Image (tube, rainbow, N blue to C red; front, top):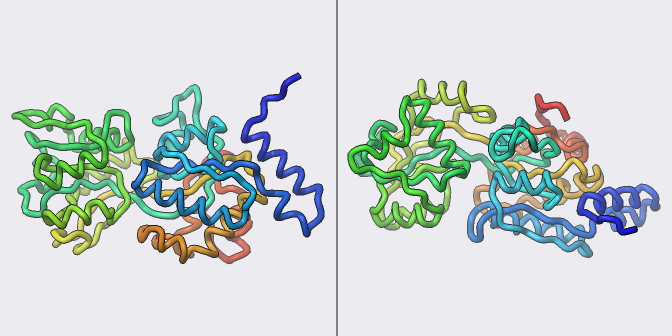
Length: 337
């Protein structure tokens, strides 16, 4: 008889073995054979952070085969759900939608095994324009050349919902010669920097290095949204979002603060991961956070005040145990684990 060995059964097996062995051998025994991390596209923030996490974990799991896969907020949730990844990076709003059987999941296959490990960064809804542009609101995007990622991606769907909150549709953008272009992140920003696009919308970390790099060509500015539009967005589509103010000076052309909505970026694991492994992962990453900061400046958002907050999904018991030992407050989830 052949047994189908999956990553989940390996995690369960190593956890069971750990309990059976004496304390001096415990740390080595609990190490999983494999750890697959869902990151992001090569060169992107999620990819860089995923690699930095892998480098840290190789120090405590030297015999473990650690793999970082390109992915994204939605794909990472699906991979952990299906046992194809053990850890992933995602946005709290995506995790909540997937838990409830909405995009990126479906009602027939929700993602309800996601368990938060730590909040590492914050993303915000942002529309970037040349600071000298006459675009100051969603209404001003009518007839303009715009990118919001590609159909089906989180940013595209967020843009559709943002437009709906303002009483607009994609058809309004594409009136009078406008166009919503289905471009990748790199294509979008290249086109924005060379003037082929008037605006780029993304649910993105801030201040994103790519946007700062664009300022070598032209000063950048993020739009500020009407409070009534933001309120309607939250009421209709905004589970997992909260008000965020992008400060003046964030970008070279940002003379005034911009009002928008944000969501936390979290590192999460599957519920099948043992408490001991989750505890060891969080301990290693938190106690070596200064090294993580050097991997990407946006990781400096990870502080004692933020690291245990706003993960939306249930916090993994192993992570909760470590944070409580350190006196770090952990927020509770409203979801049933």
